[in-house]
Each structure stands twice: as structure tokens, then as C-alpha cells.
Amino acid sequence: MSGTNSSGMTRRALLGAFAATAVTAAPTFANAAGFLRGAGDIRRIKMFSGRTGERIDMIYWIEGEYIKDAVKEVNHFMRDWRTDGVKSMDLRTVDIMAASHNLLDVNEPYMLLSGYRSPQTNAMLRSRSRGVAKNSLHMRGQAADLRLASRSVNQMAKAAAACRGGGVGRYSGSNFVHMDCGVVRTWGG
Image (cartoon, rainbow, N blue to C red; front, side, top):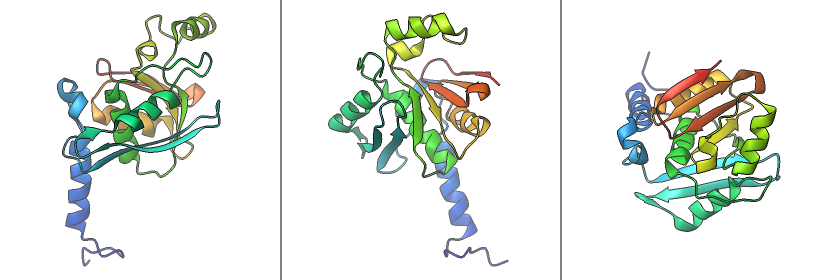
């Protein structure tokens, strides 16, 4: 075996690129805010909302700096669509989402089911489901519920958990994964 694939990349280069991605996407909770530092020049987030019909494909970080206007667009996109309430999302959560997406090696955007939730929306959802936390991190702008058509809940959850940046919930019955920048933990099935 020559060690070179059809694109001309050596096995060593491919493993090195994978290792760099894995190290970049595997922070400890103590440094979760900066776990992608040194990971390259850009961070990008790709999502769509079935509720609003909106799409976002946004580079929100370049050369160690968050882009203020891009972050503002991400916050608006991740708003509570029921109340139109906008909250500044904790960028650690967005970083976890972006790192997980990179680990999954997909071009497909996330489907955002829930980002920020107003207290009213959270109370309404809580009255309908046992699975909604009273003090949900969604109300702080620190959580997102996401889906990918091309990846299973288990695949998505494993990628998010590899980041070790916060909580990862598997909701196989509803086909989505919860990602947050809270305490590192996993739940669900």
C-alpha cells in the first residue's frame, strides 16, 4: 500500500488533520470558552429553522476574534420563535455546536429545534412534557436542540460529548440532541 489516497494526501497527513480536529474539539470544562483557539482561522455555523424558514451559514469567528455582527445574527436566528424574544447566546454553546458539526464531517446544516426560550415558552413546554427542565439552560441562552437528517442521534451525541464542553442529551424518540455549555454530563437514550 502506498499510503497515499486518490486525492494525493498521505495517511500521515490525514491522521494529523484528524488528530488536530480531535484535540481542538476535546476541551475541558475549565477552558470551554476557548477550546477552539488555535484550531485554524475560522469558526462557522450552519443551521436552518423549519419553524421560521430561515437559514444561516455564518463565519462567526476569525483569527481568535468573534465577529460582532455575525454573533448578532446568530443570536437573532436562535431566538424564541414563539415570542420573537432574542437573547445573547453563550458563545461556548455555539462553539460546541460548530466543533461537533466539524467532527461529524457533514455539509448539511443543523436543523435548530430550540435555542433561546423565554420563561413563558419554557413554562408552556414544561406543562406539556416531563422532559423540560424548570430552570432550563435554554432560558439563559446556553443550550440548543438540534437535528441532522444524515446523522443519528447517537452519532451527534458522541460528537458533542467528545467536546467535553457541557451537557449532551439524547432524545432518540424525538430525533434530536441537546447541547449546552453547562456542567459536563450526558443523559437520555
